[in-house]
Image (cartoon, rainbow, N blue to C red; front, side, top):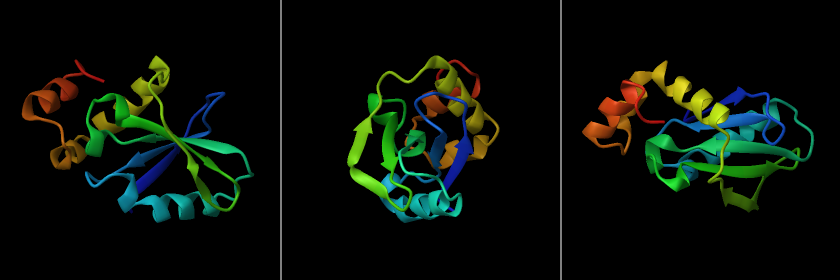
Length: 121
């Protein structure tokens, strides 16, 4: 699976979708949609997408998509530049527990080193 969903307690986002490939969301869009369908979510669910492995630590790392209960709405895609610190920490902790994922990321060696040490999020 190239994407993993994690439930979060946030008023804006019900789930974080972690893109587990350096190829980005395009490579796992259908997997994400299927995972959301399997959860039988209602219309209006907004998913935060963490694209650390493909976008690095840039402003484009986080994006969001609206799920209408059956499919993701491509027109709702937008970059999220003001993600709460608690969500950024949640996402960073996800990768710190799966540190091997960073090996196939676009992060530079110094960025990987600092991320692993908890100096970058």
